[in-house]
Image (cartoon, rainbow, N blue to C red; front, side):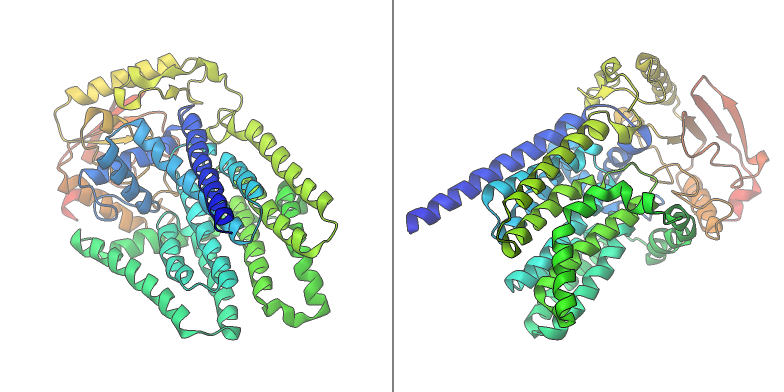
Length: 527
């Protein structure tokens, strides 16, 4: 008996080891292929800035991602500032996601080989869509881990899972507000039903302990870095809420084709647990309060949250990573409820394999989320020509897809101009690696430059708050010139409607570089 237990532990260890290494390497491979400047360099720059004392909310307008900034700063501190340590951040999270999925499925007594299969396929579809740290992927992973903890808390009756739920949700929320906020609602709703029929005070104590710990760490960081709570409230809560109406517009119309057919494989993957829930509840509605039903409801809620989040996001399609996960849970319930389950299980395995191959080929290998689907990736060039910090990154963007050498040449010239200018300067660009490569502060007032989405435009009621913030940063940092390096997807001129025309002069230095020289004027005296 002891020998069998040891053999089982060894098998689990080797499966986990291979899973962690493989999911890490999968993502590392794709992290080095292609660039979408506004997304690819966002955390690269903000992690570097945080490492050098630039504080979110206080020094830079922050609408999402401070948790990613903090983690990236830690990676840069440990491994040095390089594309390797940058991509490793995402790759390690991909490994955490794969390992957590494996261990969760294992807790439901699924055979090891199937736990491995569904987990490795999910990891192939999770982070490699971008490859580099990205808020949508971090929030998805952390939110899923909180759901895993919830269903394991319900299934195993172990208290420790309640402790981790608030910590994971908090980190998810400070990666991106949605869908973390939706998962918070789902978990609170499910937990209330669970405690209504399974009330045990020690479980609640564990949850409260998790809340106290993460909130204590949060407020220590806030007060230690002298961050205004009002700034956090305005930038991370109130302004994003004011964008709710425009995001909701993307959700509609709720057409069958958009909501169902487009995500049909996700629905099919979770069909067996959904069928079991409906069947049991039609026989006896009280079954919906049973623990197993709450687990299924959590999975169904997860499916709908991801679908509706995908409909409301401007980023590329990425939620197909859920298909192998849902197939894994369908496999578990098929074994439990259907005696002749061989064909069902074979179908689920085939669905996972085929969907992974399909989406991997259609979106990931073609770098679709980087807008490189129709681009010849073989034209990419090694980014080490820009700097050794970007070593081995295969540079090609949608902007110069036919001639990446021209883009590199333009950027080298832009960096030369910026380096030779000894005045205090702010950089406005999607190429946020520039300040990192030059080892200077870019004094950017926003984490990314995209009016309306990143900071308020003139139509937003919080525009006066942003205007005051930007002018204050120009004054505090004694900025003399602003360099704008194009192409800039979401902005044309950050000073329009901020400063009067007599407060600055504007000129074009070359094809991609504009410069604005600030002058003394009354606009600065008002703030």
